[in-house]
Length: 90
Image (cartoon, rainbow, N blue to C red; front, top):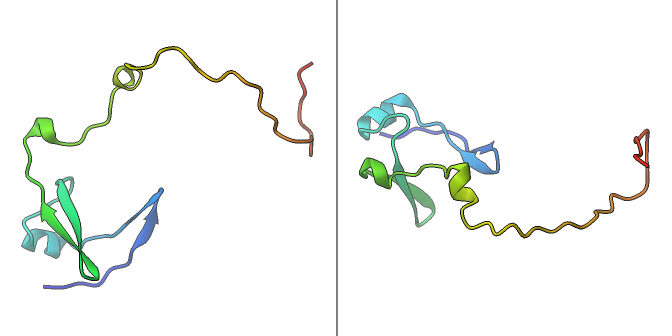
């Protein structure tokens, strides 16, 4: 079974739409995790069955700042000359 689709921009990445009948034939459904690999001049999607704890999840804000030591760059940034109706704080 084959189908033709188009690669489209999706944020900073690209995406494709997979027709429902192809998903059903591959025993996949929306939100399934898949592994993607390059083969010759194409890509292969394979079901990535993994235990729930091994699946991808976004880090919490606490996890993102766990190693933050408080140091930050506090320097003034130059934005160039005024070009319009900018409001200046004196």
